[in-house]
Structure formats: C-alpha cells, structure tokens
Amino acid sequence: MAIELFTPTPGQLYPNSSAQLVKANFRDANNNLCDPVAIVSWATSNASVATVTPITNNTSLIAPNYQNKATVTAIGTGTATITATSQSSGGETISATIPVVVNGAGPASMEIDPQD
Image 1 (cartoon, rainbow, N blue to C red):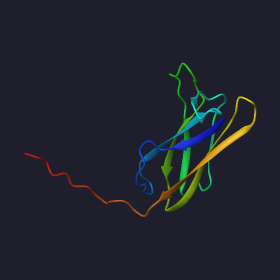
Image 2 (image 1 turned 180 degrees about the horizontal axis):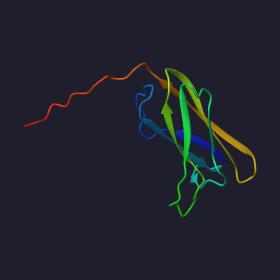
Image 3 (image 1 turned 45 degrees about the vertical axis):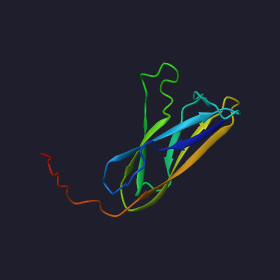
Image 4 (image 1 turned 135 degrees about the vertical axis):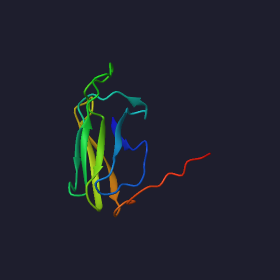
C-alpha cells in the first residue's frame, strides 16, 4: 500500500492568505485507489511558512474520520514540506510529502469591472 498527496486546486499562496486543500490518496499493490485503513497524521516542516490542519469527514460512510484531507494555510514567505503519514493494512508506516512555496505579499486590492 502507498500514499500519495495532491492538491486539487494548485495556485499561488501568499502570507496570511487563503488556504489550499491537500488530499492523501491510498493505493494498493496494483496501484488501485483504496480506502484508508488508519488515521492520517499531518505535519509541516516549517510552521512559520505554512500550517496544516486535518479536515475530519464525518459524512463518509466508507472511511469516516480518517482525516485524509487537510487545509494548508500560508503564514509567511518561504518553503515548507507537508507530510502525511499513515499505516498500511499490513501495519507498516507509509508517508508522502508535498512541497509548499509561499510567495511575497499578494495583491493589495482587486478591482472588478462589471460587464454591461
């Protein structure tokens, strides 16, 4: 079993800005998607750049509360590595990482030009 991380909506991250969703997918030995067998633990290598908060899914009937999704929030400029760690059905520890880059200050304002 393996774990992989991806962001469904990659984009720019700026300090003190919106968050980015990260999802951990589990794959079996044949590379097929499968349900998590244990809670996913999330960690950041640099909390002054980005924090990670698990999203508890109370509505899932297949894998409730396995926390296979998380929100990454940009804090300051720099780089961080987000790590997801879980356990395979055989009891081995599995993990995956994804880099996060937080750029300098984002746009100070936004102007919307209405269409006629």
